[in-house]
Image (cartoon, rainbow, N blue to C red; front, top):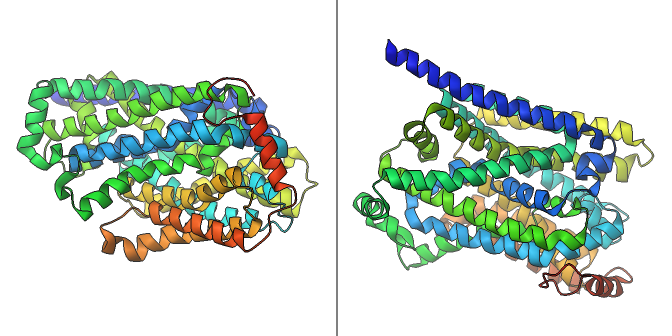
Length: 506
């Protein structure tokens, strides 16, 4: 009887912490709603965000439920081999802030762009709106898959922590996300990401330390891994230094390539209040991503020692939280998991909504519609897209790690090669951009469906990037760039200076 009462009390404590957190998010949504009354305000917070907010927002968005459930679960299975993800993501984040952020911000400010398709359409003088249409199709296809995977993560989190049904957890997470995102727009997204990013940072500092301490300290922790499977300690994993091992390492490191040009991350640079303060945000972003990724990998490894034989490796973090901490801390850790999920879903919903409202309705079909009508359309569409992703998640529960990586690859392969060429190669043309987006997207999707198993499971983003770059370069060499492109790029370089310079000048 006492055990039952204690269990109810613990569940109630966890639920209370979650309820407070969700109220905070709704409060942020209401606070941010004043900024979301125009299209620019709703989709990029009026371009007024400080770089430190952007840094946490970008990393929280890039990581998602994939970090706390997916990466911990993957390291539980493959051991220190998962550290290749850390290498790839740290390099990706560092290069994004050092090389991409300031030139991209300069271009988008010149064009008064508020979406990545805005930038591409202006950069290549695309009066036929081909780039906008192609972008919208790709964004919609991948956002539905990506958001559905995040709702799957929320279902697993609620089920593991509170004992609710998977379906109930999916619905609960979706309702809160749709509420504060549709009310507050991108400002609510960015500041909720800040709160969520700080919580994730603190959790991933504390959790692996607690796990290794409960395992008996570092020596006992390492010995426990060796007893479970010696391959868990090898940098190349169970495959060793073979073709399969190298392909696996490249695949894990390749995850970080998306930080150079995934549209939901580039939107953060557009929303910055100044190009000159971006380098400071870059330092915060790199430190943050190191703690995120190393903490997740070590937490998963500690869980392997403490809880061997889990039926679902992606429940290792909830298992650690429930067993190692009192109920109120368990509630905080559930909040952190929900934070990781929500920080990505809200950004994806805003991205998909902007692809319709800004890039199709306002720029193609109805340019004279008033901002108030467009923003309310954006709010409604955000809810509709979220409900579609919710239906997908309810219909099919997937492994979070691999399904997120599939959608992550589709978006990044379509946009990153084209964005990089447009920023640094004046010879890039509209035809090259269109060809690169289509080839990158199809290359990643087709590789995943038909070729991946035959080539040691090489991650689809790598062939997707190769296809995107090759198509962009080949088509550009056969066509002419827009007039003045060389001079414009030279002027941007003069304004920005060296992309590797960390000072505030320029």
